[in-house]
Image (cartoon, rainbow, N blue to C red; front, side):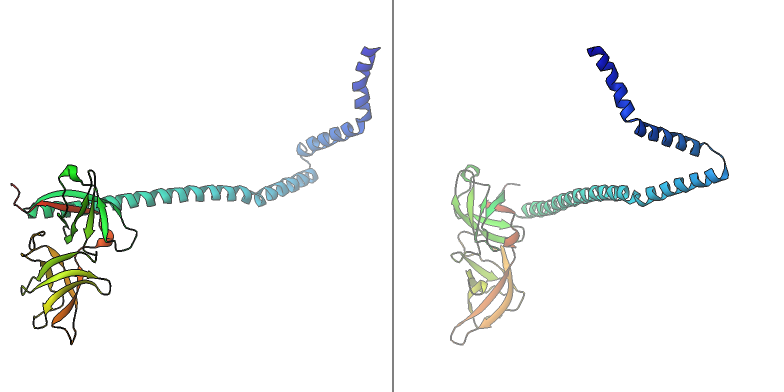
Amino acid sequence: MLNKDLLERPNLFFVSKREYFTLIAAILVSLYALFNNDRPQIDAIRSFFLGSYAGLQKKFSWVRQFADLQRDNTALRQRATQMMLENSRLREALLENYRLRQMLDYRARETWAFRAGRVITKQRDQTPVSVTIDLGSKDGIRPNMPVVTPEGLAGKIFKVFPQMSIVQLMLDRNFNVSARLQGNRVYGIVSWSERSGLELASVPRTSKVELSDVVVTSDSSALFPPGLRIGQVKEISEEKASLFKVIILEPSVDFSRLEEIFVITSLSPRPQ
């Protein structure tokens, strides 16, 4: 009895749904007859349906085109970013190569004993008054050693640790150096003023000073060798109650971009 019920169930399902199966079969037969009939009327209907399908396909093809365009734009942006990073890396390498060539030329030109170093940290200010370099007592560095760049005097060693040192830059208001005008040999003291910047002080009012005159270290300094470039005269003024000129200098060293330095470890000529 159970087996008979199992056999009758599929038959009952097909009987109850025979209208749907009949409709599907009729549609399939009609479509077959439609697309395999060569009569002009049927051919016109077939052309109408095929044209309508092609038009719908063409209208909705923008979805695929938009997806392809978005994928291409993403790939182009990635490529542009890669090229920008590569260009930045090459430009940085070129600039570093240029700076190192300047340092090598400077070292070959001067006769003092040098140690080349790199700035590893600096103050967050735009014009730092001190920086930390990667040379220390293990490298023979001692306090008060001059620190220079190919452009001129940068400062001096302030504090020494085994692996690094702190450099006091000329921008520190406690930094002073004996200097002179390179042209007429007039002497003065260079220091930093919070009001006007780098100043050459103690120059008599009667001394002849002109704009763009070069200021260098003098031969009366116990710490710095003579002739190190400090800067150029940018502004000259005189105060009625003073016997000295007020001379503002443009530093030779760009302290905001300080990266590589030299520490002069000995003022004696190095062996050739």
